[in-house]
Image 1 (cartoon, rainbow, N blue to C red):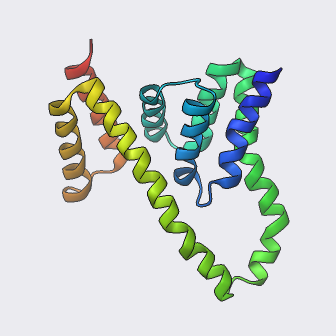
Image 2 (image 1 turned 90 degrees about the vertical axis):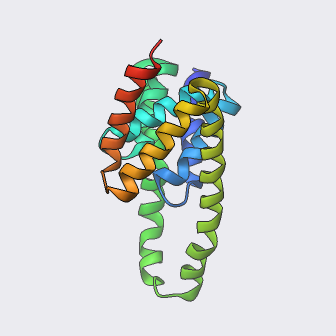
Length: 178
């Protein structure tokens, strides 16, 4: 029974603290899953994140369902999903009227301005952790090929990120498979 409570806490806390939605919650989920409860390694977490990004829908719920299932079976997946959406549901019901009433307030606008840099730092740290994991797993040459290729595909040729992820998976199967 304690595993289900841990699953709930591991996904509820990032949901309540992850201001900005799924992308802002990912480093918080990673902390809970990898560092606090040690259910996965950084490499395993990055694989779940990559697969989650390749699928349609919100990233946090896809990751919660997978990690919850791996940790606690079907009930674990249900607990993780509920824990992921519960903070938004609760806060939306309680605070939506208040935020709507004060949406033009300078204080509300300033709150958003102050939180954005913190989210950027969290995502930057997560990126460097994934880069370290990629360098260890795939090696420097393969990592550079994937980084440069992904950058060119998305920024120069405007290929949708989902297709870049799929191409990266195919590349990994062809050139990095064991």
